[in-house]
Image (cartoon, rainbow, N blue to C red; front, side):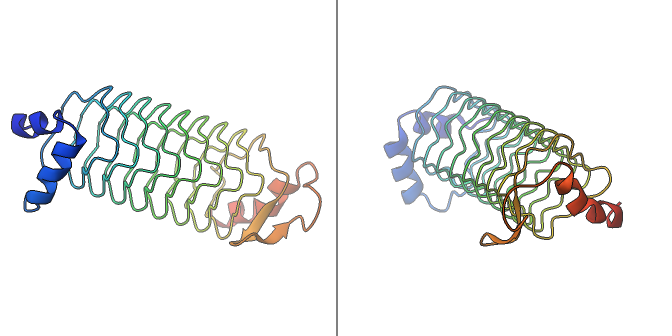
Length: 239
């Protein structure tokens, strides 16, 4: 349960809260678990290390907020604005993030196991070393996202837009990429297997090295079935 003192402070506004955080730096993990903060303006709030387990943050403005090391597991973030938010090493496992805006956010090292990110705006978002295993990313916009070394095992990326995304060294065994857009994505050393679904992929070309190097095909677009042939060996070796 949320600590009523902390909750009252936060509801006085971001300026009051941030000043209190500055003057009480020894209190690094305020407990706001289960709090109803829906439809609240928390843009720019310093929520570093805050416990928001099971909190309702639907329709909340958290743009430019600091949520580094925060615990948002089982939280409701549906339709929330998390653009430009710092969520490094945050725990968002089992959270509801449907249709939220996380564009340009930093979720490096974050835990997103079983999170529901369907239809979310994840464009230009950092997921370096993040754990997205079993996450639902159906119809999500991941264009130009950084998924380097991310764990996407058994995640659902059906109809996801991964145009220009960097999936270098990502783990994608059992991942569903059905009807996903992968044009211009970097697939350097991505780890797939025979259970990885690549049906009806929309992909004109990819890069096999970061920095838009080793374009395949070297010019023009993939011929029908050529994308699957290019990675078929990876599927066989990692099955």
